[in-house]
Length: 115
Length: 111
Image (cartoon, rainbow over all chains, first blue to last red; front, side, top):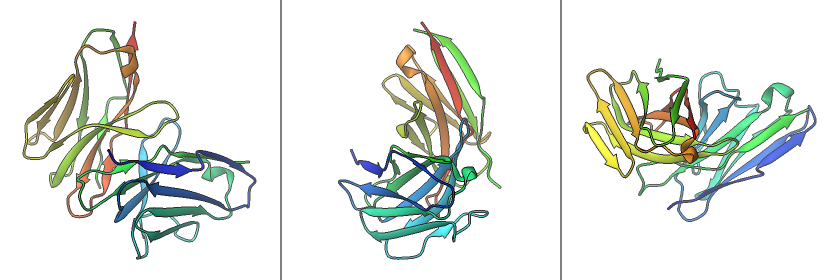
């Protein structure tokens, strides 16, 4: 089956720094990638949808200047949390969808802790 | 807005059947999914059903869809301790392929 990886799997950073999370589709071309955020014991909330080569579409209430998304190739999307604060601490999960699949394939997630 | 509701918690004994329920609101959903999430991990797709189907069976898993009532269920036969996890249903918007996730059900399997 299709595999999606995320890097790093966890990161701890100081308040005010920026953190980049990578999402890669390893064996298929992902025309669309999705970024989700999950707080402890809560469901996944869609943050944004990114299509290769175009600007990401953000969900209502998600700050596009705070969460920068780049989908520069068919196998890589990045999420940069700029000037991170403790309230940005969360589990960030990406998923990828290709033209030949009906489903989204999820990455293993990245746990961000901002001190 | 779209809300997908699930009961928070289900406890069963090993070997029993588990039934996890989900109600959704978007009648235009094309696919409905069930995912499993173990602690600290990503999501594992268990099964899915197309919106024009009533039932789908896949080994120990049976999905029932009542489109009139917008009700989806996942039955796990012969539940094992390894099935302990959080289960999420999700509906897919056919136009945007966005997934709207349910609130999640924590399944605890007692040995």
